[in-house]
Each structure stands twice: as C-alpha cells, then as structure tokens.
Amino acid sequence: MKITQEEVRHVAHLARLEFPEDQIGKFTIQLNDILMYMEMLNALDTKGVEPMTHATVLYNAFRDDEVKPSLGEGESLANAPDPRGQFFRVPRVIE
Amino acid sequence: MEYEPVIGLEVHAQLLTSSKIFCACSTAFGAPPNTNTCPVCLGMPGVLPVLNRKVVEFAVKMALATNCRINTYNRFARKNYFYPDLPKGYQISQYALPLAEDGHLIVETAAGKKRIGITRIHMEEDAGKLIHDEHNPYSYVDLNRTGVPLIEIVSEPDIHSAEEAAAYLRALHEILVYLGICDGNMEEGSFRCDANVSLRPKGQEAFGTRTELKNMNSFRNVQRALEYEIKRQEYILEGGGEIVQETRLWDDSQGVTNPMRGKEEAHDYRYFPDPDLVTVHIDETWIEEIRKTLPELPMARRERLQKEYGLPAYDAGVLTSSRALADYYEEAARLCGAPKIAANWVMGDLLKLLNEEGKTFDACPVGAASLARMIRLIEDGTISGKIAKELLQEMYAAGKEPEEIIAERGLVQITDEGALKAVIEEILAANPAQVAQYRAGKEKVFGFFVGQAMKATGGKANPRLLNDLLKRMLAP
Ligand SMILES: [Zn+2]
Image (cartoon, rainbow over all chains, first blue to last red; front, side, top):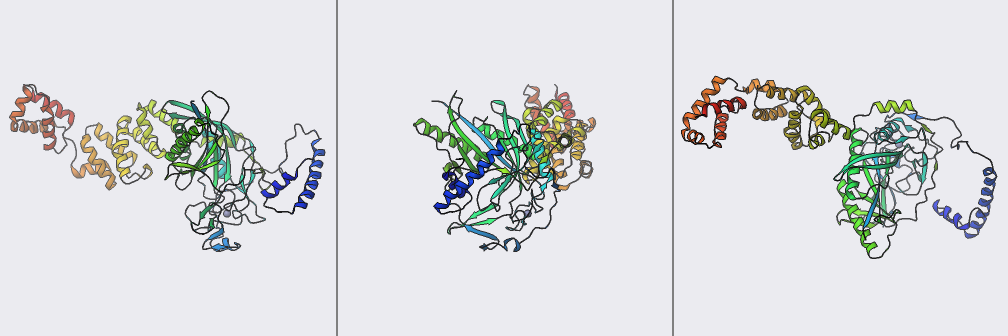
C-alpha cells in the first residue's frame, strides 16, 4: 500500500473536506491505484533530465511597476457573503 | 549547567514598489479597507498573476548586498494553508529554488566583528490584515496588503545572544534602507522579524528543541523577547523539564512570551511549483546591470570615511547612519576641504537643528554647498567660529546664503590689528586690578580679558589675533 487511510483522512482535513467513513476506505484504494501507476513512471531512468514544472518553455513574463486602478470600494466586497462596512466579516480565528 | 542559546532569525521586508507583486494595485499604506484590491489579489477564479519586474531587481540588490549566490533559475511555489487573510487558500512564495542562497553579513557587536550566515532570500506576497472583534466572535478582513511584495531573509542559526540578534537586525535594516528598497518602518510592518530560539548545553553540537517567537515590532522588543525566552528555557531545563516546540507571542506590556492559542496542527504546507507563474531566469548580464546600481554599503562607507577623512569610528558611524546624511556630509567635506571641521558642524549644530524639527538631511534647508562656504569663511578668518554658530542658525531659519547674512549684519571678523589693539588698550585701562593679578602670575585671568574683548567686539574679534595681542600687551 502506498497510502494509508490515516493519510487520506489527514489530506482531506487539510483541504477542509469531509467524507463518510466508508468513502475513506474507497478513496484509499483509488488513490493507491493512482500512486501505483506512478511507480511505473518512477521505473524510468531520468538521470540528467531537469524536472519539468511547466508545460511552456517561456520564462521571465514580467510587468512594469505601474499602478492601475483597483476595483475600489463596493465592488471588491460585491461577492462577500457577510460584508460589514468596508470589511469582509469572518468567524473569529483566534480565541 | 551552562547553556548556549542558538538563534535563527526570519525577516520579512516589504519592498518599496508602487504596485503589488502580481497585480497593478497600489501598495500605499493607509488606504480605506479593501480599496486597493482587484480580482488577482482577491483570489478570484480564472485570474493570472504576472510578476512585477522591480520586485526581482530589488530582491537581487539585497541578495548581492548580503553576498548571496543568485539562482539563475528560480521559481515560485504555492504554500497551502487556510486563513482568512489569505483569499486564495495559498500564499505565492518560493520554496525549492529560491531567488538566492548561501550569503552572509558581517555585523559589529560589542565583542567585535561577527559573520552571520544567510541561508536564503526569497520573494513572496504579503497576506491581508485581520482585525479581531473584542466582544463578538468575528474577525474583519482588509485585503489591501494582500499581494504587497516581500522578501524573506532567513539567517543561519549562527546567533548566540540577544545582542547579536539585535546587531544583525540593525545591519539588515540599515542595508535595506540604504539600498532604497524598503522604508524600514517597523511600526507599519515594513520590517518584521520572527525568531527561532533553542538552548543547548555548552559544547554540545546537537540543537535543543526550539520555540518560534512572533509579534516583536521593534529592535528593543526583539532583544527583550529573546532575553526573556532564553531565561524561560534555561529555567525549564535547569528544573529537568522539557521545552515544548511551539509558537510564542511576545507580550510587550507584560514583558513575557506566551504560547499562541488556537494554533492548528503542525504545519503541512504541501508546497508545489505554482503553475500560473513561469520560471524566473536571472542571467549574469542582468545581475551585473543591477550590481552597477548598488550604492556603497554602510559598513564599507564607515571604513572609508575613517580612512579617507581621518575621522574617529564614532563620527563615521553617526555620519553614515543614513544615506542622505552621508551624502550630505561628503559633499560638504569635499567642497570645503576640511573634512574634520565639516564633520563637527554636520554632527553638531546642524544635526541638532534638524532633530529639533524632526527633519532629516533630505530636507535640510542649508545646502551642503552653503555649509561648505560657511566653513571656508571661518577657515580664511572672515568670521569667527562663535559667530558661525549664530550664522548657521540664521542660514537654517531663513534659507539664506552665508555671505548674504554676513553682509546684512556686518559679521565680518575684526582682523585689523590696529582696531583690535585699541579695544584691548581700553579694556586694560579699565581693569587695572586684573592686569596686576595676571602679571603676578595668575594666568587664569587671561580668559577674563578674552571675554571682555569678545563682548566689546560683539564676538567679531579674530580669536587667534586677539590671543596674540593680549599676550603681548599683558606681558610685564
Ligand atoms: Zn490587485
């Protein structure tokens, strides 16, 4: 086994996802299959091959340091589920 | 048992760009909440970050100034965690392949010079600001700061005392401000510091369990917090206890560190390369271009001022405490040709005048060239040093040139021997008792005659000539 049920629960928690217990078992098997498949790729000799992090070979895409108008008041909060005044309001994060 | 503290520091410095690191929103401090935001820094779906070139240039400047090796290829990574000040659910930072690595800084401590290693410098975006409701279970989020460019500078665990930590921080701060890439304002959070502290028995190689200190917003607080934390850990270890690995917050009013509450499980950030940002490629040509723009750094400048102008270490320290001050001084010294005298005027009268108004040398109403001319006028005997003090005040207040004020107020020094002789003759005639005392060997009375002569001439007597004449005329 490449991954345990405990690890699946941990990853789910980090992503703030909740599942019924029977699904945890199912996901563990499925994730395990995917990781086993990766093993096939690991068998390839990649010595001297730079890891690829992007599908493009482009580099240094920059912008100049220029300020452009922001959304501004109102619009920035338009999607907020619970705005208060000029702020987003959220459940308090510290005791 | 004797313990040795091991301290590593993480500094976050806000870079002085006009726009944010990945979008064109303003970085200005103090705008109404959430007004400096756009879809990119609000973390809306489907947007793409684009890197601000100036952020790379500024970060490279700091890397060069701290003797780092710059990674030709470096890239951004996502640091994943949930917190309301982070709208995307991840912070764009650098992890594997940061901008620069393996640097060092030489700092001056009471015990002499010390080399402190710098592990890495990387670029990242700042998070937003949370305001917690004291009475209700809510926090309020302001995302203006989200996406403001930062560099994080991580030191090696080479620091072994609170004073060393403070010296290192001051040196970093000084360089950042000298380079003009950070305003250094600790109160507004432009320069922030976290510390890792552990103790180990003296002579032991392995590190002890460490705590992480946060919430120290001044050099003094960093030093106090570290001193407290070292004592706290020492006390626990002496009593046979164990240090708990945790984050602790400095409480300035109580002068203690407390464990941070409501902290979630051990960090598991699942860094991975950010697919939205392409690799940054910094070649030698670019590095050399940036290197050319580096100013002389504070420590090198201090040493040069001592050597070139024969100044004491203390004076060189004061004169290089800001780039504007050092530039001002050097211009004045060069123009008047009397570097030591220029140092005295700049550090003394002029700095005092500026301090009284809370001004800095950028905004000095007396230009370096005017000060230099005033010094020349003292040197060539046109005015006395005493008059010059008043003159400088007037130059400062009225923004006038020295010659202008001298002409207006008739401040030219009396260097005419005949005129001064006449004044002295009158004084001697009016004070026969003191003359007799002096001639009987009471040399202290000499000062009395100098004072009288200065008073009679309104401070305009040339001091050297006055001394010579007095000595001659008082001789029995
Ligand atoms: Zn923005």
